[in-house]
Each structure stands twice: as C-alpha cells, then as structure tokens.
Length: 311
Image (cartoon, rainbow, N blue to C red):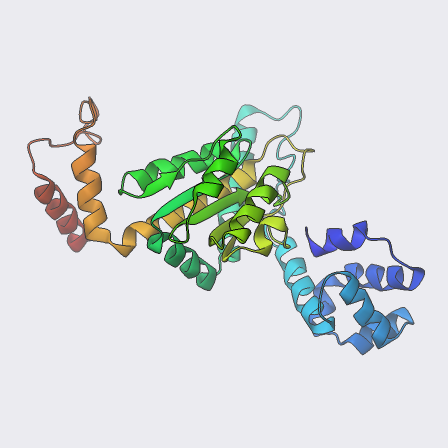
C-alpha cells in the first residue's frame, strides 16, 4: 500500500491528522524538512511527529521522510496528459483512442524503467539463474503474462513449474526444495491465495522474486528481491489494466533477457536448435520472417554475429 493511502486509511487523533494534512499538502517539500520543522508547522512536537511515523510503520522521521518523499516524486512524474484508469472518453474517435493508448504504453515503459533498481534486478537474476527449478505464481489475468515468461524459459532449457488456475498452486509451492526459487507476480500484493504461497515459501526458506506495486505489501515483505511495476491504477474503477499489463510484460522480458545473457552462446544455440524442429516454423510467404532451413545451427549463429559486428 502506498504511504499516502496508508495515511488516509488510518484512524488518527486530531494532532496526528494535522501532521498528516501538512505532509500530504507539502509532499514534494518533505525531503528538505526535519521533524522539528513539521512539529512547528503543525503546532505539535518532535516526539509527536516520530510517533506518527511509528504508526505508519517506520522506525522514525528520517526513514519515513525519505520513503514518503520518494513516493511523492514518483507519483507526480509521468501520466500528466493521460489518465491510466480512464485514458479515453465517450465520443473520442478511434484514432484518438489509439493515440491515447499508445501514449499510455510509452508512459508505462518510462515509469517502469525509473522504478527499476539495478541491485534488485541483479539479485533477482542471480536467484533465478542459480535455481534448479523455478516456480511461477500468479492469479487472474496476470497468469497469462506469467505463462508467456514460462514459455520463454522452457525454450532455454529451464525447469519451470507453471502458474495454475486451480488449487495445484499450493502443491507447487510445497514441492519446492532449497535448490529451487520462485517468482510471485501480483499488482496489489495482497491476494489471499498469494499470501498463502508467501507463507509456504517463507517457512521452507525458498528464495523468491516479487514483481509487484510500490509501497510495500504482503508479497514483497519476505521477498529476496523486489522488482516494482508502475503503480497508477485503481483496484476496479478503470477501463482496463493497461499500465500494469505493460509493466509486467516489460519486467518479465527484462528478466528473461538477463537470464539469457548469463550464458548467451549456450542459450542461443539451444533455442535455435530446438526451434528448427517445430513444425511449419519456417513456412511463410513473408521474406522477412522466412528462415534459411539449409543452414546449420552454427551457421545461423555465425550469420547473426556477423550482422552484429557490421552494425
């Protein structure tokens, strides 16, 4: 949950409400303030400000200030010209709608890249590349994004337990051993089924990567690495989950590509050699898509590398 929402949903005393109102109003200036500054502006005291921070789940003013300011800056970037929940309106032409959705996707990519933390990404790739098996957990429509990721991993000879639409999801979690790892995808991070998965993984000391919204939640709490997705959508008052879908796709594609790059030559050889045997893959009238099936795998790779060198 976002800190801003946590504040709004909390039961506060009159003094705490005064502190909350000031912080929300001055969110983009909070990074420059000390606890005494807030106390003076709200006619309270520094201890009262610190107690407010404790109530929000932080150790003190400095930790709260840094997290709240970072969140405020993030929320005020991007999406100024298009609403991620209602990107188009009744009466808009088809091309106006197309343009707005294209803008939304561009904003989602830029937003996601600003959230991407190099150290967390490196930890995630280390965990997954060293795992004997990888289990992927998701619910609702997110399962379809996860399934594509599983498909990619299987093409480079990774052992993967696929996300499931039924109760097998708990069985998959309990099957994992210390050499394995998991990925949990959840926008809210509070889905009851996935909270149950987190409990199982935590009890069994299975490392997992959380791909979820900013602000902290049940899925990210025990994660070994956290990759945040763009966090702009309401739970249900929206036309569709355009931004979260694009963000999930981007993060998963980045993860797959980084895993592929860990053993680039081996993975490229394996993928090409296996794909060649898939029926009808080379049959197309489009010259761009057409493969030269007379070439060996090594010749295909050599041609790809030569094109890269020329560039």
